[in-house]
Length: 123
Image (cartoon, rainbow, N blue to C red; front, side, top):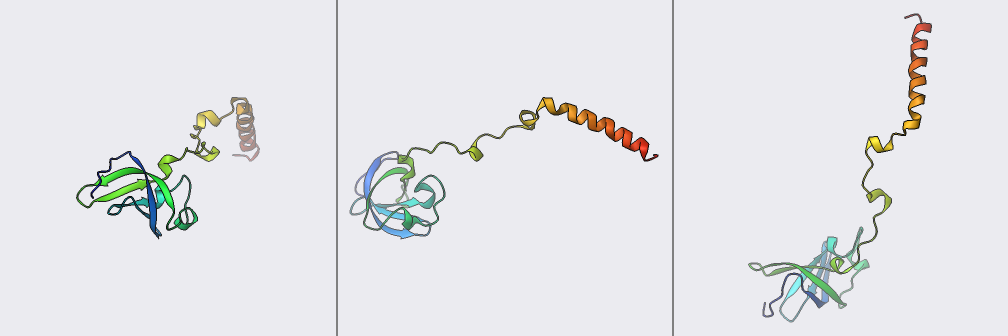
């Protein structure tokens, strides 16, 4: 690597290749990095080519630089605003939160009926 890149830096690069697991992005003449499929956007990405095209210039954020292998991990997702949490992603309610105390009478009457049914059956 001739240019020294920094983790956290936002740079413009050109998509040079697309693989099932992500897209390769040239940052300059000698340096390229990988935007892993999980770092393309929020949500599920089935096909990288649905989001990025070879030859396209994009902004990427540098997530990590492995000095030994000179591999650079990139992200386009880090530059996007996180979508609001969907209902299914909201924190789950505990059982205590879900129990409606006004329903407790239903359980009491069931308990009484159960006792009555047992007596009726002759046991």
